[in-house]
Image (cartoon, rainbow, N blue to C red; front, side, top):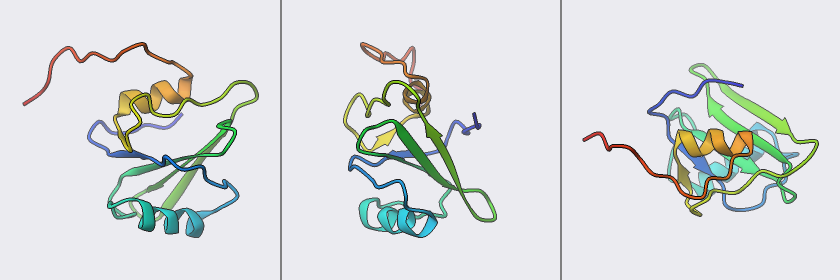
Length: 110
């Protein structure tokens, strides 16, 4: 598992992606699908058609990095709210296979 800072933007691609794509292919998708720059420090999450594989592309201060995970059983759930920008809590629940019935914040920082 890797650490994600609390203020990091995490974008979930809502389209099915061929995960044979590497840095250039996923970077091209980011430029066409998202308004965020690839070097902004945001994490970009991609799922395959069967949702048993996930790739996360992010800028690691001096270059791009890809994190890849393949499930032997089960599937990753798409964003519970169908949104492109997800928060860190939703991202980690998706990676761990947790499907909440509802998310309720205890407080909102202003």
